[in-house]
Image 1: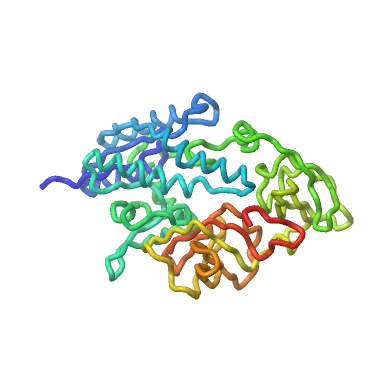
Image 2 (image 1 turned 60 degrees about the vertical axis):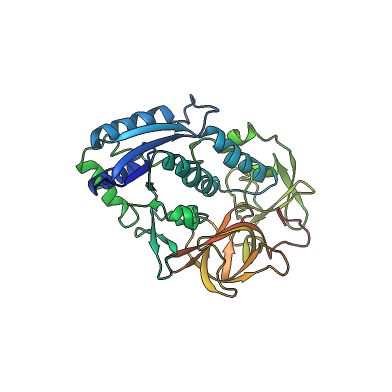
Length: 376
């Protein structure tokens, strides 16, 4: 009987390497696929493509699978990076990993895998997929909640999930590392990748400045007092503390400064002192550009939980569709105030362990009369 072919996205890291080994042990016909998605400065200290490819080939040789390299740099630049720059230029703070998963890892990659004769694809993401009693595919949190990546995967649809395997979703990261050590993977001790999806970790402000011009403007307090100058609204995110340039400028409160709001029309950055300043707290947010795992939105008025950023605990909230006022939008009303809710980031909904989907945050009820908030 012919083995089922699965194409594994291999990055050179330990997670995708163990994923490939596990599937080979389970009897699949495994093919590794290494994606090259960034070329602008591939020879810089921040891009590890060459070493990553060497690691992939070494792992493939050890576990006995074929591996192929494919270049999706054009697709990445057109579908992900261009949108990334548009959002920053508009004063918002996008999450490129969310778009990268939807457009590259589970679209361009999936299409290529099908051309290779694969029935399914697999990645080293920490998440789970299961079918409910109606036959629909559900995206679930990983068993290891400290590594759960369902937040970044919430835009996957039924067709994508039906052909995806997440072998690591049910095990802790410590077990993955232990497997890598036990089978002698050459990259067993390799550090996890961080930074921008496929671009890497680098001085972010310098990197962004290569593509977006600086547009200096005033830095004001809520009462309109000018306390400094910003280099361009694109270079700041709400809740930011480091890099504002006001570190030594404190009043009698002694509290640190935080970026709290952006007036796009006036090119003004509003800053406040104190982590819990009212301008940093929101009970209600609005979201657009929605995507639902089940193919349709949750029931209006659902009591659920949501994350407004990746490293956040689930926050109880009430979901309300805003079709009558703003088609394609939804509103979340939280039981407790959320800190530094940021336009451009994703608001992702959960019903227990089940990821329902989400949308892009456009604004909050804290759009103060004095300020035209970004994206409002």
